[in-house]
Image 1: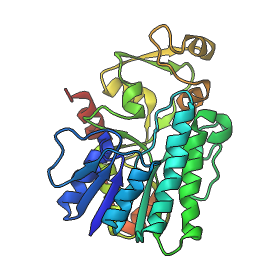
Image 2 (image 1 turned 90 degrees about the vertical axis):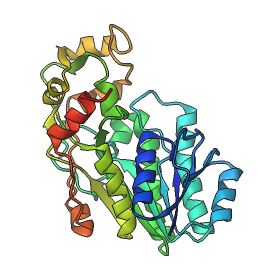
Image 3 (image 1 turned 45 degrees about the horizontal axis):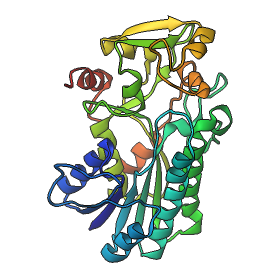
Image 4 (image 1 turned 30 degrees about the horizontal axis):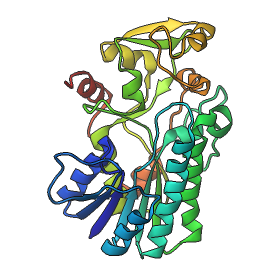
Length: 304
């Protein structure tokens, strides 16, 4: 079975590529970046998913399945290029899958789709609408990409499309939203708040994505790892020092005083939890994570 992976040169994309090879799939990749030192069995085409050369890769290889991971997910300020990559790239991916007879498509989205708010449910299910487009405009492009990918479920029912909403990933690559937030020796927290954070080891995330493909899932599925953990507990377990500060000071210090450069909407993600119910995915695939919360944080902390 031939699988095309967009965004394969990213940290998670590489793990997905390795997992596909381990399971015996034939793999071809698309990414604007090279995969230095990648497996000889995987041919990576350095093209933009939005451009004609990417379509030529679909036309030439005629993959049986495709996984879309070429999205920008960091909690950063919005930019026109990010919107074009996330939304227009997803549109191109779905179009090429339809045009060139792809039988299975997997979109790797994020649980931040749901947004963080004081009145959010403790566990988000797949049928809940997003509030992040309103409360966190910088995530509007990811919400739009998720919804566009989900539209393939009814627009192209002949394609077994799985839209996955993965929780934060963490692991030895030290890549991703949560890893970036934990980067420094001191981690700022909003005083008076200690939200639950839902995360999964990056190896488990890669396995979950390939498992969705192997089970030919058709639908929208939350994907999570172990029990969610209070943010302050994660910070301490990672050998970082929590730095609580009043919200007003936090907002004024963004991008200064050693604080990360985050848009204002990101502060709600440090106040309120985004926890998902992933029972539907477990029932459909039998997926079980291999790394618990302690193992996952340790793998991040001990990585060189």
